[in-house]
Length: 373
Ligand code: V47
Ligand code: SF4
Image 1: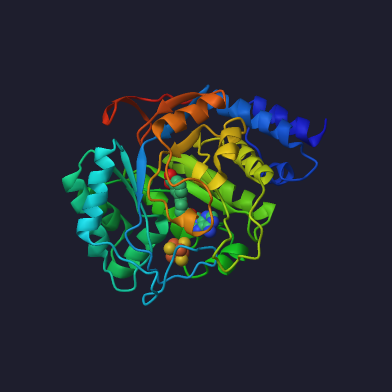
Image 2: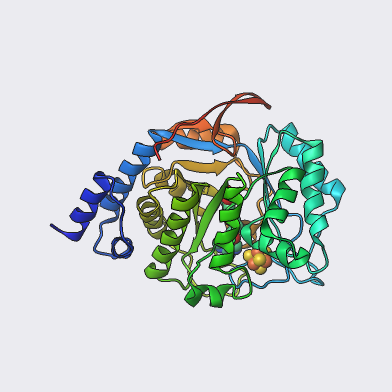
């Protein structure tokens, strides 16, 4: 039996793949289409023909950041003329715009501002939640939560509980990058390490908050680092079951300190999606983030393991600052059509994967969407 045939029989039998299997799936001798077809079996086992999307908006309250991750084109220094900090009025105006355009979710992340205290970050959640209680606030990455620990000296439990009481709905998956220190110490040595990041999500899950997880690929990392990363996420998911969605994030080099590196090809994007679907056997959803992949690759990814395409998205800065050429926003019709064109059935979901029933900008959630994990 060839190594790939062996892996295929394990997947068909529902057996877990090993670290070595994962590294092998990145080798050029593994045919991408065969790999994609195998990932598609798992994708359809878990999510049938559905492809999920949501109606969401982004809010990046400041780009001023004390850290200097070398892959980041978004951050600015305190005195940089690009630097901005949004006022409460501007933040609330974004909330109003979101609600008036029918959004169910606001995705909030930003820089670690040199002079803002935890109260400033907490207040953003509080004022938005008080004004727009139906808008789900998916806010602050593990890196930001770790920064709040430095700012306050509080326990993780206290920080997360305080944020939740103010209106936090869930945590987004950012800040994971690549866990392995051989890479992390070069691309973002100052920020939360793997253990910190994982512990924050572990604690969030224990307190009943759901979260997402990501991996930033296509820069200096090797297949071994990617698989190490996936295996660490899988182990935490075995413990808690709290991750909803994994989002592989393709590196965009423009305006970063790694601008000399070419961005990963669509073939690498599809391979990473497929390998992730096969390795992360306990995470229900894989997201093809169209902003980052481009629309064509995101559509193709729906046959290579992905079952979610993120949302309509408004006001995205992190990828557009780093050279993404995708539009700033897609209409609901555009999203549905791109899913239908890919041969899948579009399903609007809320952040926690309940089905959304909608008439224009008015919506209700109905039953949780059943998945196979
Ligand atoms: O952590 C920053 C990445 C992340 C670049 O949870 C870059 O639903 C590529 O995590 N090239 C933030 N990537 C975005 C994120 C995310 C996106 C969509 C959905 C969800 C979710 C989460 O963006 C950062 C970092 O890994 N990033 N700069 C860049 N130049
Ligand atoms: Fe700051 Fe986040 Fe950019 Fe790192 S990725 S420099 S933490 S804004």
